[in-house]
Length: 477
Ligand code: PLP
Image (cartoon, rainbow, N blue to C red):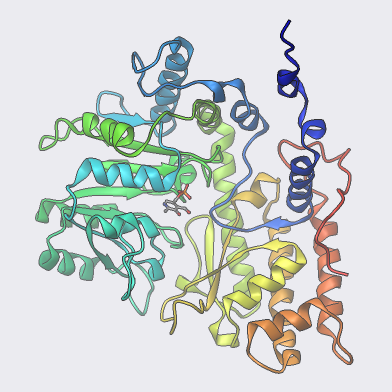
């Protein structure tokens, strides 16, 4: 008789089945618990979303759309996708007679490429906010030497910019560029822009030039759903988003499209066919379930309170840094992020990112307007979505700003002690004790203080009361 021992592994829980992977997960849980997460594109999704994401729905293939699949056995998957679409429209207060949504994109980049595929033809012209000015790679990014992403490889793209003085979108120059370039599509939305958008101003341009208007609201979609920012749906033909930033769901993407466009009555069909089969295969049903869970939470009145707090926290963070004498691009924020210009201090974003990493504060280096080199960004980007998901309020965020202030002052000391401007010398003095130098001891001191502060807060999906320090952490001495 055949033995089914070969299947025993299917029933073994992770810690037993694969202690190596379990240990890596445990170390990451520890990092998230003991650190402060200020990456503006990140957030902490809910336990319920993680439960759905780790569910048995991962087993099912369902190419196609509800009630029109290429495989059998999709009755419940259809129910799920229909529910997710309904919740997506409700979360953004949309009329199902006017708007539809495709919930299958695997992530934001694939959602954007599918949207471009639906809206325009290969080699058609598009415009998006330039990457150094806060735009995203998928909005047509290229360098002098290279077409960097599919959005510039398969389409002709031209960036628009922010003004040199206010650092706000230069809507006047955008209109002039569009008059000459004649784009078929203008993309608005950004990855590192702390202010709200004037969608009406761009709509005027697209109407004049006969172009589509698409908003990629990936960063701000949670704040848009909470009606704390201007509404891109009032003006745009297509709106894309990731689901894991301010929206606080699992990692995925959504494409909303107008059903009532007189010049494109078939937009729904084009978007759906662009997602599958043009750009993707089978939907990730476990993720769609988690997106549905997250969207239910977004429609809950508590989410509006969350979104308001994210913005209040970002404003507080910015104001405190200004109090300490620092310079923010645009002077402040309307949303969840601030852009901190470090150049007046003679520091680069990479150095401050490195020091913060050593302290357990996660941030990212970011270009600021007027940077001499794209390789050496002069600023950092900070976001408050994840801190707010750990229950922090204004007074707590002020303490975080004070940690950042100390990190920057410490970076200046380390730069001095490094004896050169090279990053490798800076890292050397930040990570090892050298005779007569103070920096390393201060890094450790700050790391301990950050850890003490961070471990006061809960972490969704984790019982922090029973959490134990795992083996193998990459720790400073
Ligand atoms: N669009 C914007 C504005 C983003 O900021 C990002 C990611 O940071 C994306 C799209 C890409 O999303 P993903 O990383 O899920 O592909």
